[in-house]
Structure formats: structure tokens, C-alpha cells
Amino acid sequence: MSGLRFVTAGESHGPCLTAILEGIPAGLRLDKERIDHDLARRQQGYGRGGRMKIETDKAQFLSGVRFGETIGDPITICVENRDWKNWGGRMAAFGEPEGDKVTAARPGHADLTGAMKYARKDIRDILERSSARETAARVAAGGVAKELLRALGIEVMSAVTNIGGIAADETFVSPEAICPNDSELNCPDPDAEERMKARIRAAKEAGDTLGGIFRVVVKHAPIGLGSHIQWDKRLDSRLAGAMMSIQAIKGVEIGAGFHYADIPGSEAHDEIYMEDGRPLRHTNRAGGLEGGMTNGSDIVVTAVMKPIPTLMKPLHSIDIETKEAVLASKERSDVCAVSAASVVGEAMCALVVADAILEKFGTDNMKDLIAAIDVYKARLEDF
Image (cartoon, rainbow, N blue to C red; front, side, top):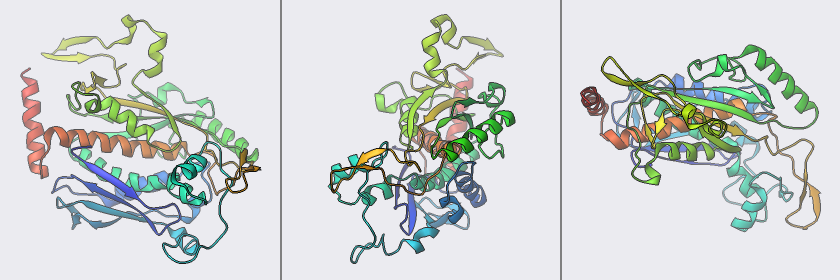
């Protein structure tokens, strides 16, 4: 990231999770209720585990915001872990170690590889940071990015399209139809949602977990974000990398994605027409990106989440201390977290698109940013 930078810190059962966001222009009004609402959306969802009954995530702004408006400084956001009170001894920064070590690695998690890479004898040193609890900080940072985009007329939204093989009807989850919804699974197809819930209940009874697919749509992004010049400037590359960075995401596609393998070129591309003196496309198979740049259509990113690797009926593994065969350790976990991942996906897409905007129109304050975008759009009108 060059226009916008952010990092997160903190462990799953540490005192808090923190995000530091640098590059947000001064003069952006923030709606903290909207940011907290996204944090609540990340926690909700049918199939979530007991941890979500403990935490009530709220964003605490520690720097960079004064009287509800950004001032140009780095923004520091803290999300407290209420469960810390039960883990203070086991997760203390100093003092003698407390509690049993975790030595039974979970297949599909960062446990074994992380312990080997960082030379740790207690897998808790790995699982605390690799936990998806970290994404609370990302959603808080993404909430600020969404506020910036909203001020520029750009909206970011998502929908769950598949859980455990139960697919929603495209009528409800097509990029054109996606809009904010209040469903428990972030799936606007009510019939599919009920069948998804039944599949989740069955998985829970079996001690198993489920994955699924979600789609993120960014509406009204200006033409020309990103670049074809270098690999790391291509916006599709940056979006795919951001989505793949979310825990348990194993595949990403832009627009028609893998469906391109099934169709000829004559059906694959979005033909261009002149209407009212402007070039327009009637389709959006490219997902709003051509040559690594936004083309004025909606940005459409779809991602698949694997089933959560923490199972109540653990898989076979090894103990890193004894080197003997064991069943994997059990941590408190969800049966299905695809709806939560969709909210994290919104946050990551918002951060990448906001970064691309600030990279192209980089300014210190909102007045100059809006003016620069207006001048650019006026030039495009004369193209």
C-alpha cells in the first residue's frame, strides 16, 4: 500500500486488538455507529461459536480523530478483548508461564508450520495471532476506509452465496442485486438461508465444520484506479492478495473468474458501445477490472472459505513435544464463519480501493481530494 497503510497487532486472548491506519486525509467525518455496526456484523451469524457471546466489539479511537473528524494523523483503533480477564495469567507479557502448553497441532491451521518456523514449544504462541479474531482490527480499519469511500459516493457491500454446497439463487446474490441485508448469514435468499442453517445444524451435531463462498461488490468506483504498468500496481492483483490474506480463504475470482474456462472468447468479454457520447458496457463479466484498472463497472470479487480447521471431533495429528500420534487440540470455535468472512472481505476491499484512490489523487485533506476527483472526472467527460 502506498496511499494508505495499515497494520494490526494483538493476540486472540490478549488485552486488545489494535489497528494503525496512516494516510486518511484530514477532514473526513466518521460515523462511529456504522463502524461499530460492522464489528457487530463480523460477530453475528448462524453457526458462530461461544466466543461471540463473550465479546461485544466496539472501536476505541486513540489517535488521529478529534470531535468525530480525522485530523491527518495516523489513526489508532483499539478493540478490547473482554475474554482477557479469563486469560491474563496465561497470556501475561511478563512473569512465569501459567497454564498447560498446547502441543497437539491442528491440521489445516498455522499450528505446526508456525511452531517450526518460529521455534516455539507452545503452539499457543502461534494460534493466538493466527486466529481469525485478528480480523476484528481489520474490520475497524476497513470501517474507516468505507467512511472515506462513502464520502466519495462509493459503496461496498457483500452477500454469502454458498454454504456447505447450498447455493443461493443468483436472482438474490447477483452483483446487481446485492444490497445491505439483515439476514443471519448475510444471504438475501431466504429459502437458501434456511437450507444453509439446516446444513450448519447437521454439521454441529456431527462435530464438523462448513465453509462457503461470499461475494463483495464495490459500486461507483471511478475509472482508472490501479495500473497496467507493473504487476504490483494492478488493482485486481491487490484485491486478490487482500482477500487471500483473510484466514481460511483458499480461492478468489474477479468477475466471471473460473467460469471463463467454460466459455469462448466471443462470450467472455464485455463489448463496448457509445451511448450519449460515452463508452458503455452492457455486461460486466470482467468484474469492473480490465488490464488491472477499474473500468467504471462495479468491482466484483468472489472468495471461497474452507471449513474451519478446529473440529469438535479432532483429526489425526502429532504432538510437537512427544512426537507421538495424537488427536488435534480443541479450541473454542465456530461451526461456520462464512458470514463473518464476508464482512472482513468488505473491509479488505474497502482498504485496497481507498488506497488506490489516495495513490492516484493523493492529498492531505478531503476538500482537495474531492476537488482532484472532480477535475479528473471532468477530463474523462471530454475524452
